[in-house]
Length: 131
Image 1 (tube, one colour):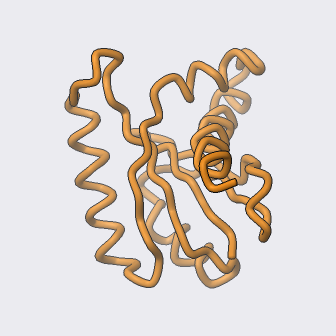
Image 2 (cartoon, rainbow, N blue to C red):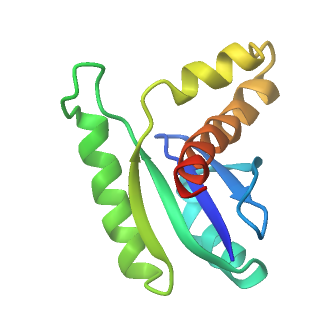
């Protein structure tokens, strides 16, 4: 089964998927956060996903921010809506920075796509841990 990762944002959420053997993480899509529930409903119908990793934005000092609390609440809400999937939080410190360093976004489309690249970095961290 595949794994998925979410890089939750206030406006945009990046989504990444693994291959069925869980060797590779690749950016999948960036969706408007307001449409995330309907997107996930469709995604779970189309793909066999057993785990969704949600990037947890902890501060560089290791403390929680307001965004950390929002992310935890969103993960808990999604967990109740989609109980057929296992939900896990994963420290995402520097994932957005890594995505930006890979290719600095110059256009609005590239900036939007960078959210799914950040999700792929989150997923890659987990897949490395598994393997």
